[in-house]
Amino acid sequence: MSTTNTQVLPAGTWQVDKIHSSVGFAVDYMAGVFHGTFSEFDAALTDGVLSGTAKVASVRVQDENLAGHLQSPDFFDAERHPELTFTSSSINRNGDRVTIDGDITIKGHTEAVELTGRISDPIADPYGGERFGLTLETVIDRATFGVSWNNPLPSGEPALSNEVKLMVELQLSKQQ
Image (cartoon, rainbow, N blue to C red; front, side):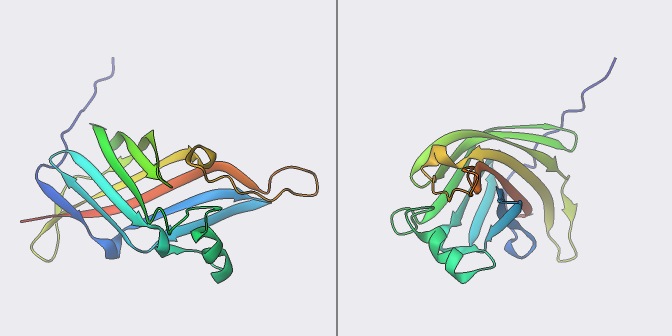
């Protein structure tokens, strides 16, 4: 018989340490995987609710022209929808594993998602504070959010997958 070691979330208000955190995505493109990140984002865990935002204008990729295309209505439509948002509706922790249900909004469209990953217990940092880590990912269908641009390959297959993996690495510091 196995036992479940369910632990509680850190209490209080915890703010993201942006220097030691990242928000990104990965999508199959042609013969490989394409990666991007957002350099401007925010996240907090307050009384058991995780929330976060990412500025669309801060999307970072290896090509300046592609970064511009990602801002256009073909993709994120930054002018009309400057932020991506997430708010949790439930967080379940079992040891170092965590499942977070919530709503994500991309390009003005909101969908329920489930993020899974790891959580660490709070530790004392060298600066007199406390922090903990949270690593999460989920897969969404970008077309559901109206992000449906594609370029067909000569075979007729799409060059860009609709499945996009969202990846978040957070270090959160306790607010006094």
